[in-house]
Length: 122
Ligand SMILES: [Zn+2]
Image (cartoon, rainbow, N blue to C red; front, side, top):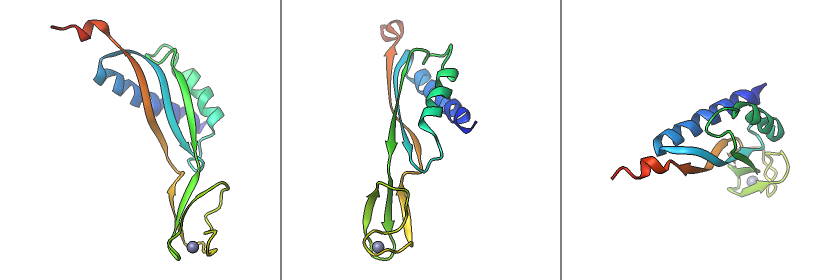
């Protein structure tokens, strides 16, 4: 299952941020999933439930925001966000377009509880 490895690398990223910030635990994770990223949101959610067991994100809420496909037309220069999975320019009909957004999977934000002890070093 592809989503399991995606969830695992997401967790690596989260743990990295947690270490750098000296946080105690993670309460909320927001990720952006492009419609062309190949990731099924529901499968990612389920995979994350498994991966987060026993980690600092044990009780964290995972928020998945879907990102539509956006293209720029190389023929007429139009930029548009697509509701459907089509890379055809809706202005001139050209298939000569470039995908600008919709292929990525990104960590957008992270809410953490900081460790009180490490905050009071002075
Ligand atoms: Zn066009």
